[in-house]
Length: 287
Ligand code: ATP
Image 1 (tube, protein in one colour):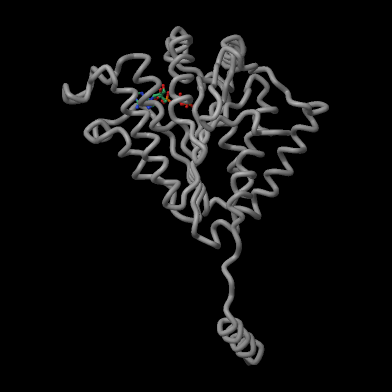
Image 2 (cartoon, protein in one colour):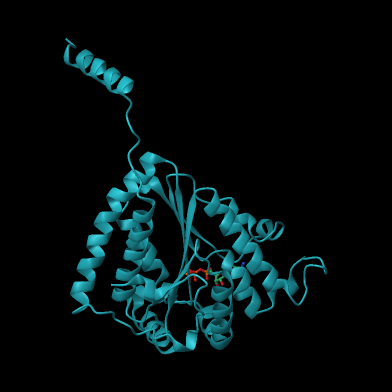
């Protein structure tokens, strides 16, 4: 599968209306896609172990999507392949009073990845140019007048781009994944959540409210993605009506990012090798 097809790095425009959310790639069937996904998840284990051992680069994976697009499932699959010690997940909910008392990047910066780690953001500071834009929430917070200009979202795109560049230039890979579902598929998923008692908890009244703003959200996503897609910190727009396809694509994106880092176990010096042999002899000679 060619994931470049889904990659946006600023060299071509992203037009949401031209994007087919039902794509299944050229997999023979669902089973083949799941096998491929599992192969990638297997590869991920070794890559993550080396990333952790090397402790030089870190990886930030951002998931953004409309409700019921499969963010939680995607996070679960990425997590399933790796040693929990080397990965952390952060969910970005409605900001707390403490969050709002800071600049909007603060809560993300606090939990940015460490070297050797993979950090997953389930939603992120992109909410500050998505839900905030759709509902004009910035006008309801304690921002000074000079900040609430016509250009506030363009300013934020620049700030986000600069922040991500800063991370990249300091040894962290940033990949942004938009799970793109259709309005029709979201309806199907919501109905399942309502009909299946074991999924009722996943459905909240707010989900229906936000669905009412679908077109505004699509416009906000399109604008944010076009404004913040760069070669170093690309967006991947993943067709997500078929969850099995989306998961195979995501697994490949994550693996190919780690492969491009090509992490290696730290080299052991001759001196250290000798020391290890001395320890070995000591252990073997123990009573
Ligand atoms: P998810 O749908 O991601 O699984 P959830 O529905 O389980 O999450 P919620 O309690 O609904 O969890 O939290 C996510 C909500 O927080 C979303 O509606 C999101 O738009 C909102 N949110 C996140 N960041 C912000 C922000 N900066 N400003 C306003 N609302 C935000």
